[in-house]
Amino acid sequence: MSKLSNLAESLVGSEIVKLGNEINNRIRNGERIYNYTIGDFNPAIFPIPEALQAQIIKAYHEGYTNYPPADGVLPLREAVGRFVQKYEGVSYANDEIQISSGGRPLIYSLFKTLVNPGDKVIYAVPSWNNNHYTTLNGGIACEIQTTAENNFMPTVEEIKPHLQDAVLLCLCTPQNPTGTTLSKETLEQICDLVLEENKRRGEGRKLYVLFDQMYFTLTYGDTQHFHPVALRPEMKEYTVSVDGISKSFAATGVRVGWGFGPAKVIAKMKALMSHMGAWAPMAEQIATAAFLDDETAVADYLTDLKGKLEQRLWRIYDGIEALRAKGYAVEAIAPQAAIYLTLKFDLKGKSFQGQLLENQADVTQFLLGNVGLALVPFNCFGADAQSPWYRISVGTCKLEDLDIIFNNLEQALAQLQ
Image 1 (cartoon, rainbow, N blue to C red):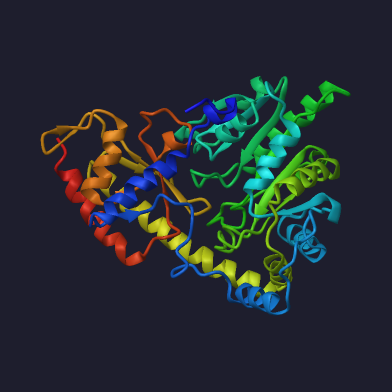
Image 2: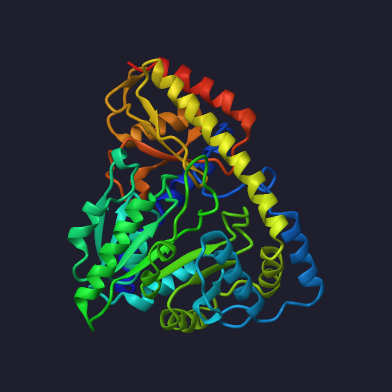
């Protein structure tokens, strides 16, 4: 086969998809696999809000099946403005809001708007897809290797040395894959660094922040979400936020996302997406606008969803900690946010039924083959191949399965030597 474009030849497929293919093959072969690899929801456990579903059906019945405007229907942009004002205390005009089919087109178009080939992009590792978006745009990756001691979130000290000459700083809080968050103090300090750096640059190209907050409504206990512009209003000129209904309302397949930021940047993103055709469907936009304005339905749904997710996250955390108390080499970071929990299986070098677990890939296979537990290793998010940390996603988790899983896990761990 003849060579394709340089971009096509350099592309690396999704590591999670590769793992998912193997899991699906095992399931087809009759194995009982508890698949917690996908950042998605089982609609039988976590259906979308009834009020949203009713509005979608209503919109189709009313004939909203044509092309939407390139920046999204006005009622939805207005509703998004009210939503972020209510929940985050930030104010955005209609021309500062862009609607898309989920968050990915927004992130891609933002990269395209800001990043030239050879430009430096800063992001934490592990994190979701920043490496791929950087590659797609010919950027130079500046990866910050985070640590468990900081809940796998980047610190001010780690970010500061890399800001010079960077064009984009990617922040995600709550973080995928870790389910952890940036504290108010840390985010304030990062904002101050960005403002100081842009002041230093004068009239030159500015440093922008991609603020991925797709899970911002899903925080637990004392954990709070903070927006850069709410903390430092001057950040509005340099921050583009990405959000939507995918995770807050378990509506991943409904495909309604929104971004908000400086009007000049949003205008260029709109122009790019008009060529991509990456719009959310018209009926779903009309429906989402009506739903977001139904404050009671929104609040009731979030209360119910968060309660169910938190219950699962704490059950898994407590189960892992109970195993750790028995002396097994496992660990977990307490739930903070999102639909994820960070787990550690430090089993490399041990043997199972005479077979040595030589590397972390062997540990992943041990969990999959002997426990029936499918998790995503952090190396799928850019971490070192031998990292013992994993993401577990609870969006497809049935509570009644967890006792079985932990029984299987303890039996398997007990056989390690």
